Image 1 (cartoon, rainbow, N blue to C red):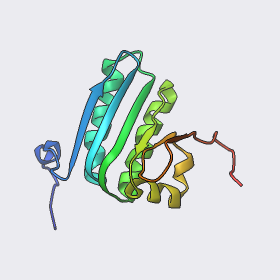
Image 2: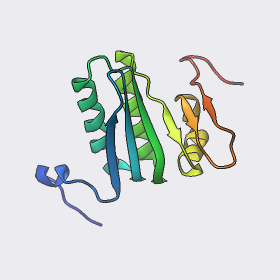
Image 3: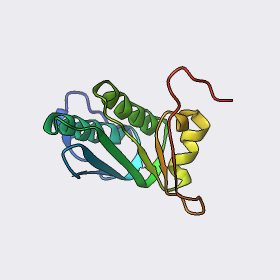
Image 4: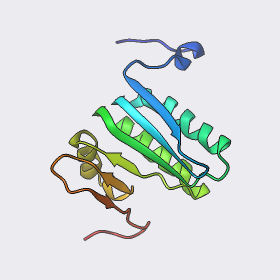
Length: 142
């Protein structure tokens, strides 16, 4: 797994087969980004591109829902990509809630303390449907 990508921009533009990012614009103010597969560093580029395209193409955008129910693996680079998307939307007043369908996504967010950073739409089996609101910046939980 020693891939040398230096000077090979075309390789960076090729889609990674381990992740699929699909954008569905719902209306003039909301959109969905569905993530299927492994949410790792390789997912960062297509996710950021999808979010950037939405922000440029939909001027009244106020909510981009990230559907992670199809995620099969999440590592720290994938968590970082989720935080990056939330940070991209924040200054523009765009809410970025996460739809969570399994412990693959919920557990790393809970362990890292980032569960409280996002609005979470909880769709895990055995958990009553619930939306967890994020904590305001600077507020510590007890």
